[in-house]
Amino acid sequence: MYLTMAPANQDKNTVSDGNGLSRSSSSSSNGPAPPNSSEIVSIGITLIGSMIATRILATVSRLATAVAAPLAGLYLMTTCPSNDSFDAKRELKRVLRGENLPEDHPDKPKNFLQKTIAKVNATIQAETDAFVGCKVEIVDLMGLLKIASILSPTSNKYYYWLGAVNKWRYLMTRDVPVQESKRD
Image (tube, rainbow, N blue to C red; front, side):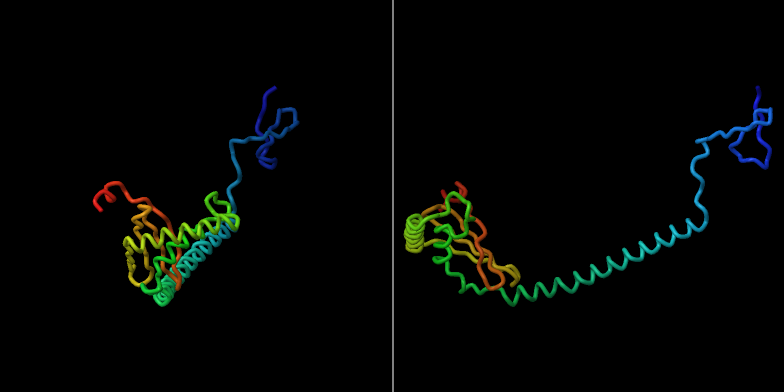
């Protein structure tokens, strides 16, 4: 039995066996049919529309940033606290009492007795630091923000606050490096 190609009026994938019988053969080598021109046009329009939308969003984003940044800077400049508003002794007492600690922190005083002891200890250390002469520095960052630091000689630590939006916020505590404490 030999096979011949089907006549032109039959399907391309149909093969005749010579006896007048034909069968269909599937060929995966041809691959998917190429898209017609209307599909190509719709894909092109979608791509061009996406590019235009992306450019518009990028321009709006740059414009919003260009407007928002100066407004935020102006707001920070007008609400930056003055150097006189930083009360070093009061802020140091707050930190030493543990007011800045989260509720689940193990060093945070929980009951009345612990809170009272923490207040007394904070008052004694803050008054001792004031008497000995703690070093207070306030750095102005272009009128937008201020950073205050206190060097406590009794605990040998630096305490830092950020001054912005009419308020002083505690940032962190850092131990004095060994070389620096030996020089003092």
